[in-house]
Image 1 (cartoon, one colour):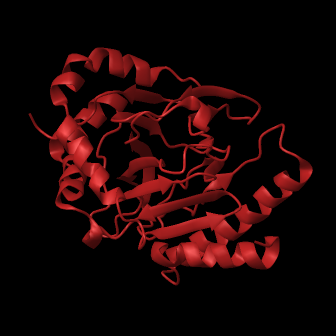
Image 2 (spheres, one colour):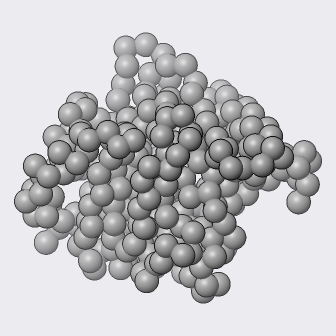
Length: 279
């Protein structure tokens, strides 16, 4: 068997295409048992020591990420290569009807391993749509692969999909082991897991993330991550979410001009949080 469970994908292709095309509240699909189980288990080895991972700790998120491919294990590199392979790109194009999908081979924008520990979170947001440095690249799809054994919804880590007016959470998905979620990246595809995790201290919310792009005929305007408050969030929280979003947008513009890189983003945003918001 290969790295990706293509026999499962091919057997379910009609159902998967049908699921993806239902807009609820936007286009997505959930695939369980996505990878060969041995590869999925081996991915966990990269999470044993996260001491050198980048910290993203600001008002809208608290997580760690490994974005330096030189530090990936052989298994992780093989999985990323499988997700960028012609066979899997063809599957995605068949699933989504989006042609000429691309992945970032050099800068690995959006290709990372992510860990969220107890107390961590990711506020509801729509993702950046334009590539930070490849000015003609438009982001089309998110792929999230979860790696969490024995995960429970009560830990507050469920992936939430909200309607385009940010009035109601329409879908929740438990991030269980070897579950893959693929969804369309658009201006109002609001998602996240905003409630601080309450998992046991010896557990964490682990995932692998990869983005897919298409190339347009001309440069695309910068569309940074757009964080949003929920209807029941208090005035202070709504204000701080918006304020922090301004700094994230500033970072995105600096990244496009190559003044700032992803590797320095965590330090930059953590400093901003300390200066303007305290702790």
